[in-house]
Image (cartoon, rainbow, N blue to C red; front, side, top):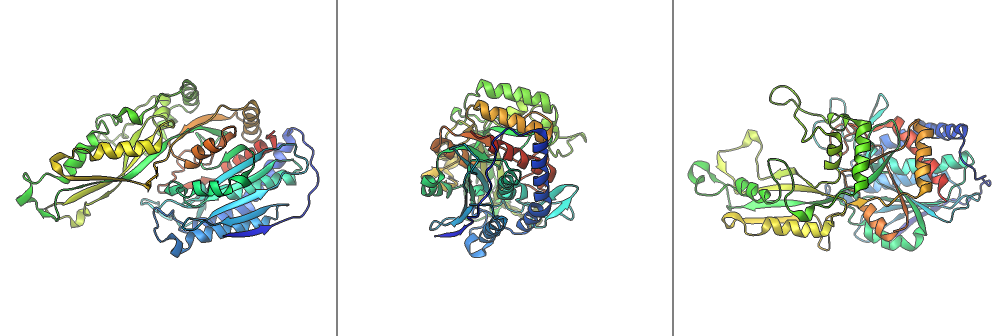
Length: 501
């Protein structure tokens, strides 16, 4: 089922010539107005809707929040009346909806390529710790920062993408055909996206450039190109030893602690002293180019690579120490080395209601970040076997990875070599809009779409970027969107689209 709109009004031919400084400034001015007058208000409305991803809201369809943000975005896009734009809300049975936008090439464009622009509208859950006056569903615009869940990750993408195209037309700049894919289950690992890519593949055309607006930035002073993304295996590790809790004075010493067994099982995976992952299957060799880029970025960012984290006070009143204070090594650890995080716990009562009882079970939600070149599905199967095999004390140990049986885990992504035209366009756009050269940085998060598109369009160039800079804190409390950076990023994206051959 699809919902369609179409806009068929004409437009004037464009001249195809490189942007001059005054033209780049005019493009930026148009986008500044779009953000102030249209994008920020739309994002404030978006933030107020608790459109949590299906992993965090099993009744998402009945609640209707995802439907609302999709329709709000569709109405906003249609209201812009971009000449020739066609928009559909595409629906496959049993899956979250997807917004598909198709803008034909301008008459002055000589490019036969298609630019694919990607974003998502689903959100992470609330999380605790928001500062006074802030909240996940309470938009607040303070000192140029728009606070609230999902504005930066990644609600702004559709609004910025359309505004970039609109600005090019307003300033008389030609552009190739552009299609937008805006999904609504990215924060759940994009389980519905492969089906939509299959359904829409024939309509995507010859994709020459992918612009993904769901990534981050090393600072707010220049355009940042993401060079790699980690993969992810997540799931629930559960240890059961009793059918019910027993007085600890009666059972402890005889009945093994489910927590202690869980610790033993995790010791197979992680060196608890260093945090290093032990099995070789979860590692890969880091390419020499990525090491070189990490060193160059470390020289630019310096100690801010680790000092920007919201450290708590340590034992001596100073900050908790990072695992390394070498900026280059810090960048590699958060982008090319596997790491384990425990993101939730079950079986432990709140402190205020904890009885003196030996608990029957303990469960951890595990988040295992994988290097870009490690296959996510194979890693999921290997992790399950590692954790479940030969359980201590013959306890019941189970690991249930997230995802469908044939689609476990998410594989990371290592960017293809940059074509000369894209490298030049990125640097020119960064210098024109930020006054500084483009920067290159790996990201520790996961965007499942990128590995899918890399396989489906192996010759396409990739521009992966985003507004998630220092302290923007996606997924956590006090998430914000740096509006000034969003404006400049949108203008830079417009320039790169115009440069597509």
